[in-house]
Image (cartoon, rainbow, N blue to C red; front, side):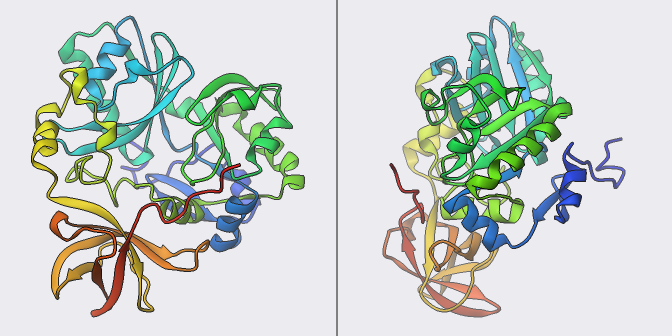
Length: 373
């Protein structure tokens, strides 16, 4: 029986450090995780202006290797991992045969036949089950290893992240572009240094041996003092990704949602050949999705939250998937799934908050884009 099934929450290797830092810990995806250390707004603004440090060791890390690793991943995922160069990464999804999303993922190509698939903690068991079943049914010359419990993941994110990591590594970080990775040492600890993240800012995700993740965390905290670093929790991570228009599984994405509804049709590579969900997704592409994920900015003074009804002309046409008061912009913003006939930038909507309708306007996603050098 799993810890979660037994009513016990799992803990990351950094759990004691979070307690020492005074974090408020909450249940999340079967783990006890820090939602905030001080103020969500302060942590959010630190990531936008300096550098925040996140513990993401709850995420799932799956190694896919073997002579037919490329063929297997092309069959199992909607993207084309075979198109990746060594050291490159791509955003992807595993779907059901009907096109519903089992999970959204990042795939890192570490060598010709060596891939790292990173999945959401809440969906780790489902992804492992689906990929294991596909391996057995397809008789692919590939293997899947769930390394999640042996991998620690620490993520410095923000405009000062590169300077911080540069203090602790000999790697040429300038050569590691967005959605690229390289093996190397950080603070003397072997890592996969990936320029990926979920905040809308520049930053890194540092994969290491879970047993050494505490040392890595401590080194980043110490070196980060002169860069304005602050440890950050899941609360800031959520408001950051929402401003950046990044979908969250369980909110914008789910088994009842397909990639085209979530504006992620670009990830689906129908031309690569057969894969799980291809026929259904091709039909959606040809007919067009029935729903569309849109951005809303409130005109009236009310904060939209997930699940709130969205109206057009007095009739419900969808629902809010995520909403907040944006710490960066000062606006009350939301993403919502609405009928595609109602979706167009500038259109007027109403969001029902505590049984009262409040005016909103559709705006272009994302709400926030980081300044480019």
